[in-house]
Length: 319
Image 1 (cartoon, rainbow, N blue to C red):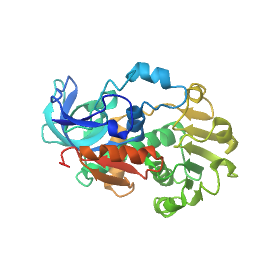
Image 2: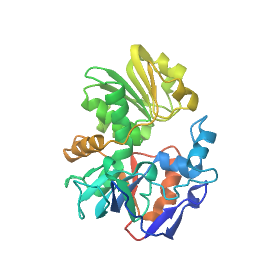
Image 3: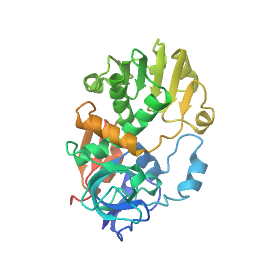
Image 4: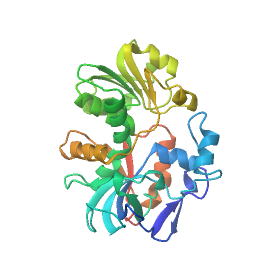
């Protein structure tokens, strides 16, 4: 099978397309022919060996000193089951599915072995690119806003980085919960985030997020440029600060009014996001670039820090 391999940390052009053996599904896994795979900020950080402040040494010890041990990146995917591993029930060859491959990764390839614990049947009303695109940002925003912050109707919510993968999902999920949403983005994306449901749009090039008056019940920073101190200053007395991109220190200190850390990959959350997408209540905001050979371009866009929504590649499409 064709796969995109990252042989060592480096720039976008470090990615190479090679022939690799087909992965074999282990117990509790299925082999998926990948129709669409997301290219995320997490993939870009891992490709470059660029981790949030304080995580550098620990991250390299965990994922690889000179390059990722899992050389085929990508975790969010959608496709069709080709083989079922031992102990799997509820899934069969030919089923269209979507989900996350976790630390196994491997989605930037024509075939991937995926645990069924974070896999669901894809609704027919949702395309493969839409399904793959909505998962990374959607699961992160859903976990932080619903499960950690307990967002509810009438709250004032600030989303910093509102046009990215996490931010665009956060704007929509907060609005669906009945919150009043202020979105921070660039002026060129103002109309976009307004369409997604933002009640107020702030151009970060003219008004820094830290200069906003507040107060907000929930502040979600999806960029990583709001410090703990500045974020707390924006909050109402009982407000909560969500640092979706946090330093090691801020992660260790996250308690009380500050929330940080990884988001889980749960099948029930994936199913919920796909149901919202199928019903038209959640827009995946997905752009398809092409086949595996378009990965360097996808990474270049992410590395600029100005990516809009979700980028998806189609591993089965020849370039």
